[in-house]
Length: 117
Image (cartoon, rainbow, N blue to C red; front, side, top):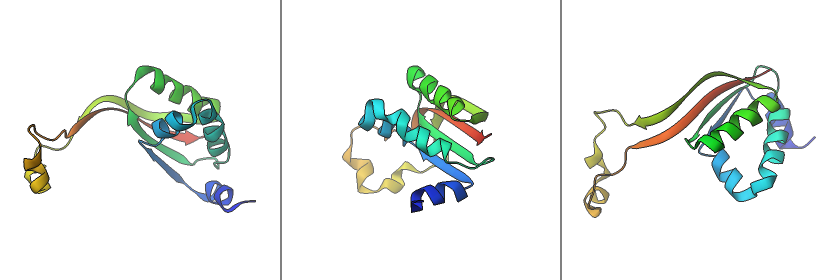
C-alpha cells in the first residue's frame, strides 16, 4: 500500500478549496478517475469540504461525482461570498495603490460539506 493511500484511509477531513476545478481543467477526462480513486479510498464518516467556482454544469458534475463514489452532501450553498465589511483593503499596502479599481474581495462560489457513507 502506498503512503498516499494509507493517509487517505486514515484521514477524517479533506479540504478541496479551488482544487477540483484545477484538476478538472488539467486532466479533463481523467479527472473522474482521479476523484474516483480519492473518494473510494476514504473511510466511512470522513468529511469533504469543497469550495470552488459556481458554474452550474461543473457544480452538477461535482455533485454527481460525490454521490457516485459514496459521499452524501450534508450542507451546501452557492452564490456571492464576500470578505467581511471590517476587512481593510489598504492592508494590501503598495498593491492597493497599484491597480485603478478596488481589489475584488468577493467571489461566486459553490460549497459542499459531504460525508462518506
